[in-house]
Amino acid sequence: MTSTAVIGGGLAGVSAALRLADAGQRVTLLESRARLGGVAGSSHRGALAIDTGQHVFLRCCTSYRAFLDRIGAAEQVTLQERLDVPVLAPGGTEARLRRTALPAPLHLAGSLLRYRHLSVRERLAMGRAALAMGRLDRTTAATDAQSFGGWLRAHGQSAKAVENLWDVIGIATLNARAADASLALAATVFQLGLLGKADAADVGWATAPLGALHDDAAARALAAAGVTVHRSTKVHGLGRTEHGWQVRTDGIHTDGIHTDGIRTEREEGLVVDRIVCAVPPGAAERLLPPAAAEQAGRWAEGLGSTPIVNVHVVYDRRVLAEPFVAGVGTPVQWVFDRTAQSGAAGVHGPAAQYLALSQSAADDLAGLPLAAVRARLLPALEALLPAARTAEVLDFFVTREPHATFRGAPGTAAFRPGPRGLGDAAPGVYLAGAWTGTGWPATMEGAVRSGDAAAEALIADVPARAAVAA
Image 1: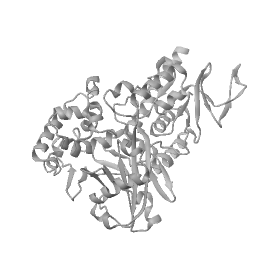
Image 2: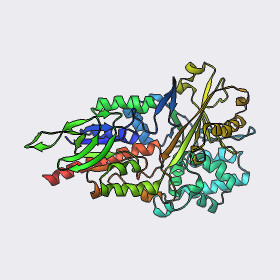
Image 3: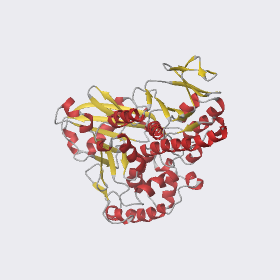
Image 4: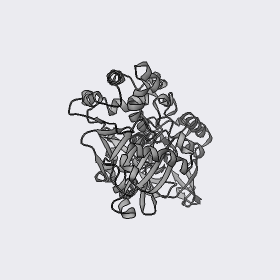
């Protein structure tokens, strides 16, 4: 039986661990936090459940949806029967991105023709650009080298069209504005989500705190699969020995050096045959041996990171009738009703409503003090939701993920390795994480795909290596 350590308990690490355990491997998962789920988890503010950002998925996110099935959490999410996104502007103007039963790309034609946040001319130009987007080859380096914003300008899209339509979708999925985003990543989002199957973009979200899914349910699935999980366990480094890979950690001890087939010495950490390194490239750089660390450092420098800021507002009454809305002509990007998932009624009373504002590509907000964030966004939220103007704010706080995702700029693909990306610099070490070469932006779908790919590569290599050794 092959022994494998999976370092990192986010979605990539958990999906890899489950896939390896299902293939009959002995798996140990090591997570530095006290919880699983990584950047898609939960914490608490008193009795209020707080997610690390509002995470949604689409019907086309087949790997993530299969992951939910695998961990037994499919009943803790909901999925729209048909795409329907209210888009609000200050002053009460509303439009909806809603699909019909027509086949793609005609399924969105009606809502785009009625999209009140653009002129008729801009709507027609948008349709032509969408058809051109559908013909792009998103897999080439030339496409990845282009700016999404530059491509939109070249295809007749006005600044208003970019801000009021393309960025409404793009900024939330790419964590980048069009001017700063890789065309290849944008094409992935729009081709797979909006221009392929008619139902691909139907929106799904958790109906429970993310921790109930990605921590509690995931932990039960890991235990049932026989995976040993160590939380609050920091890995200090990885070293190659004649007996395999040594994973140096605090608090875990294992028998050490083989003498005539018997382990005779106790040492700190684990010795395993293979490793799945499911951490960001900067963290991998600190763990890996020098040659491999140098590669990881180039990836970390080349990819960088982009923050996401979430603004949490609890009102004494309902001010939003929809499960979520998007904003245009306002600094407010997306607003989600999190009353039920958070347990807000039990904390603030049955009439209270808890809203979370998800602010992507939030470089301008990440370093601001709480009072400055409140001064900027609370009036903007009231301008978007008239009922909020007369409601009392019971609680207001901000959570920040300063390194939420890699920076999906043009040229990004060159810094996103596959699962075997370390090659001879670290044989037997496989890479996973939403930052790796999945072809997807840094999403929950991309994270799960990366974990599955790392596990599949490792499994495929085991018999080949065993045959060579024999």
